[in-house]
Image 1 (spheres, helix red, strand yellow):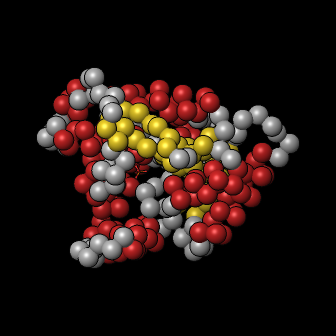
Image 2 (tube, protein in one colour):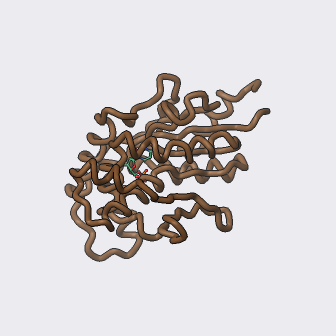
Image 3 (cartoon, helix red, strand yellow):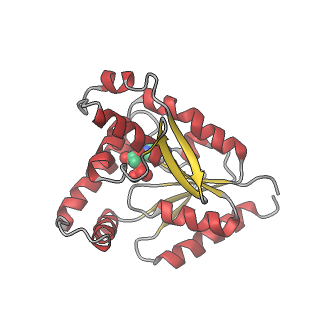
Length: 227
Ligand code: DC
């Protein structure tokens, strides 16, 4: 079989990265988390003290910016220049920043080449919002992983509690933030987060993780049969 390319798209909190990592392990593919790239651009803009509505300033911040993906012990690490920022991009503030910068066509163009290079190497599972529609429109398998907003908010809150955070906000706050991001990501003009016409939609609101992996493997088997 030729080098496999799998796109996993969907809204935040659906469990894309967890699923994509498990599939990568199972299938021997490289996992690429594209959201981390938008987060790095968002972190850089935040550090520059820009305002979220300053599109021109954010576009200008790309000048000379070097964002790259490296692999260490099989794990993806994300770099700005020579600085490993992987541990700094997972905060609620940077989530909001990533969502804002990702709406700008200049940012999408800036990060597109890097993602296309990874896609061209093959044997890859990429997760994001526009992988099946824009980055790998001819992927062998496209999965759009989703779940009801309430379920996704609850999962995110539980993840934070499991991390030992003591100041975890009430569920309503998670839900409100989730709905704001969903709306910004899916309604934006450039590369909105929607399922590709030929994607298999997998809703895991009412199934557990193991079952989600099983279903995804079923979709992959079905779509790659005879290839
Ligand atoms: O998957 P994530 O939560 O790390 O993504 C962070 C933000 O980046 C999210 O608001 C949507 C955006 N994003 C995007 O527009 N396109 C991608 N391929 C990946 C993420």
